[in-house]
Image: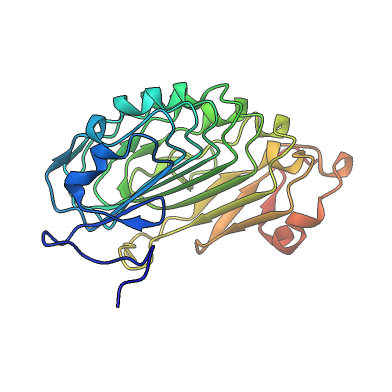
Length: 263
């Protein structure tokens, strides 16, 4: 018995759902008014999004895919795009998010892939729509968050990765690579920050203590959840302790906080 919207595999193993209807991969181009497209278990080396996306597209999900190349430039015409999920890519080495700067209504971005060493978030500098960002990467070497401090609508930030590039902090301890929350105090809508590691891949031989600077997060006006999944993390707050009232969200971590400005 066939049920509308139920995920089923076509003969190539790819599951294609368009507006809650299952179609063949070859039929996507005949859906000019599609608002939602989900592709599951893609086993192609690359995919031509220009044959898939439409100006009316609101949601695009590429899940459990095994792609070595994704060109997101066709998404620049998707002015109604609100959700983009790219998940499970094992061979993807580069991902240019530049075209997404034209998707001003993009509110949720989920990027989960094991092979990327770097991700450039600069296309989101000044983006007024992005509300939820979820980045899961293994063996990451660099991730610069500074573009996000100008995302006025950012509400939820979820980072899950394994840091390889441990740099030295002034006190001699290693810092979590690429995490810099400077300027985040201006994000009035930011409610949730979660930092976790991919436990299955985590190198337990790393014994260096991690240091995370939360100076500007302490002043983040509406932050309600702050959590991290690393052992031996020291939180730095470069503020005079006697002038700062610790927000409730950080009270559970008070024994982990060092106040270099406290005299």
